[in-house]
Length: 120
Image 1 (cartoon, one colour):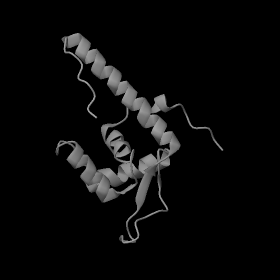
Image 2 (tube, one colour):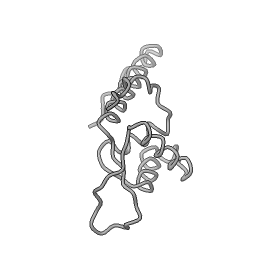
Image 3 (cartoon, helix red, strand yellow):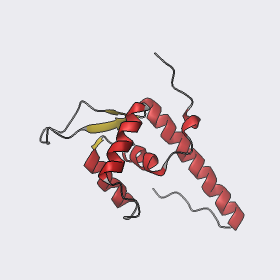
């Protein structure tokens, strides 16, 4: 089996890749669920249109960052495909999150803005 490249080779992630990976960080979801979660989480600022979303899902699968899940809720439409992060996808998401956190620290330092405490 071919060894995956270092997660850092994917950085910086394309914004829509980041949003899809983040949507799958805590649960498996189908495409429409991902679309709604991103829209809600960003207050409507990021909208993944179907062509963009499904093209992104295909590319993320091709890069082994996500995979289709075999599990699905009992009372669900059989046509829906559910997706989940791969172990490698989690590593890439963690690397991108750390990169963004470092960037925010630099921004705060440059502007003299005190860092906000993480919300729980």
